[in-house]
Length: 379
Image 1 (cartoon, rainbow, N blue to C red):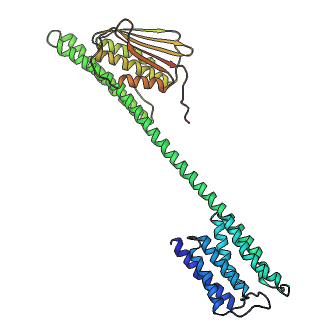
Image 2: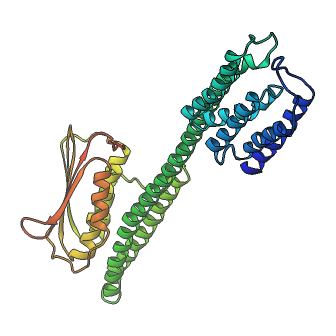
Image 3: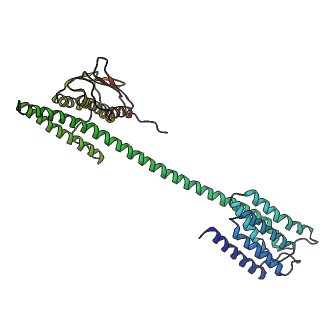
């Protein structure tokens, strides 16, 4: 039910209650009160019906109700119930946050009524209901203010709840986006490397199949190993998604010797060195270092042709330095996601990565990664 219909019902109910209370003589306003006549009834009807607009036009409705009340009591019509529409209008103004208007209407009704009582020849008799009018006026303003404050508090609570829900949904969406990016990076780094090795070995096997079956057989064995490695990598990634313990492939610096062996099997000449005293890295840093080295070797296989590669890992207390240098020719492939992915991995753990032509030709990738886990500060 909308507010206009509710206000219309309130107005009708007020009219019935005022007429019933007045004709039943349930209240007394003094010895000089006069019987209710059509003019008095009209004043009651108009003031009561003004409540139908108490929320649509609260000030106008209040002015009508107060004016009718002043005329009604100036003419000494009986009963205190005729003041109810004015009291209801004052309450509505206060509840809607129009405190000054409510106070001015209360004063506008009280001043004439009490002025007439003061100018009367006799003091108000005991039991005169109009002596309580000031208390009712103050009560309407106070109750209206309490209701307004309560509504404002409830609105604030609802807004905070909505904001918390919106923030929760945004966090879930952000987390889902981060997980999708992680999955894409993992699959790109692992599968691209394995597929590149397979492509090289297939080319070798096709070339040597007739001339040197023994070496062709070795190339096919390397293809099988690369396929098995790719399946293990994929199973490891899916295991993380299922929140289980990944099995099979180590995606950390401990897996670099195996990575070097696979690159050598694909035809690269790899020099692998470790300086400093190795120590355990946080899992995310360890994985990032492995994936950067893996992607760098993959890029050499795909773009640099036959090349010599130097893979160097240096440990110091602040972090690790990872270098992958090759002396091959510059490739002709267009821009891809490999370098972008390596840089994103380094930055994600608080490190940095520089990739570009080497000082003596070829290409160089240099990554500096911290020894401790790093988390970004979100505002």
